[in-house]
Image (cartoon, helix red, strand yellow):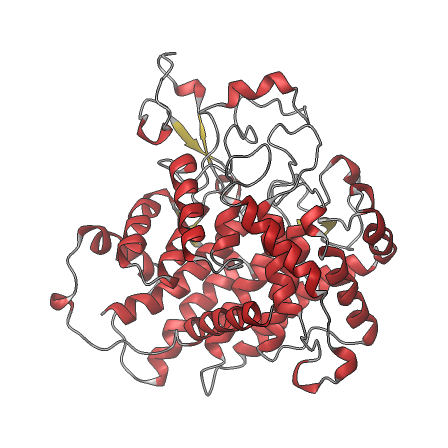
Length: 487
């Protein structure tokens, strides 16, 4: 496990280095000498959305000007929605905007923290590094406080692993209370706890104080114990749908196990008080449990679960932000399978026959009948957010061709508003626009241009898809670095 931990440290160090060096000025190579590859040149303007100029001098003022562009984006597109009381971010799909999802909140906190890391490299940041850091801390502590109110569930869950005893993954953003009717929604999400713990380690390592007392240290240790048995704990997965058939049935998910494995590696021997801690604030991990998770995860890949041949959630597991596996061959096989099975013209499908948000799904029906699944075949929604994830993956692999390819296809899918570039939640097959009912025999819907797509309308109503927007902002930050290095 020490070898895996050292690999995680190197990967985390690489992430912090990439984000922290955003302020570095470009080398000043004239634009005429840059690469003229169409996919890259057509898409590179995306990095400059909202920038008043592309070339910056070496002066401190110009560096701040570059960062201030992203500061304004974070303020308008992310922090404007943060709850004053709990620090949580609401989900735009909720009619009264009072429910927050843990996974979405963690990614919002990561986006804010990423920009804070950039400002930490500036001598006079006008207090913005502290402001952004405390906003991220507020969100992370908000999630922690919501979970600590359910501390009794953790003790029961460790012994029984029952969905009814699981920590909730959705909370009221105003008071942190449980959501009414929560039992009807898949709350058991091992991946949510794992992503939180993984992010907690990185933020504390960057000198943010998130854990204040020994009660909180002990509770985080309990969270670690809770995910150690991920290899034999069926859950609802990152999409809170359970099996592909959406019949309120849990199953083992490779993505959940992989995220738990990565979180255990990060937490092993970590001091929650940072540099100010002692031996009593160190978290311990069962090495045997980690090895069982690793073995099970390696065995499941490139498959997601018993019912899902593959899943876009695996992109989050084998690549950024988790980097849960170090076998490059297995990583490539998993990503290629996702691309082959799930990629479309407007994004990646989450998994095959995913009926959520389609116009064929009954809005009043929470679960499906087994015979309903066939109608969702080749009618799944496509999520452009995963194009941004593939860009980030290409940046970490230093693969300019991949970065340029996905930038080119993502650019026309974004929505231009007065608030800047906005990530669309999903694109769905609009059967009301379909002019003929001819059924395509193609197994690859990406080549079927007869299907008319429409975008979700949350932006038209002033709502933002914060999960996708946070990933897009991180993608832009890393892309700015990548563009400067490629000159």
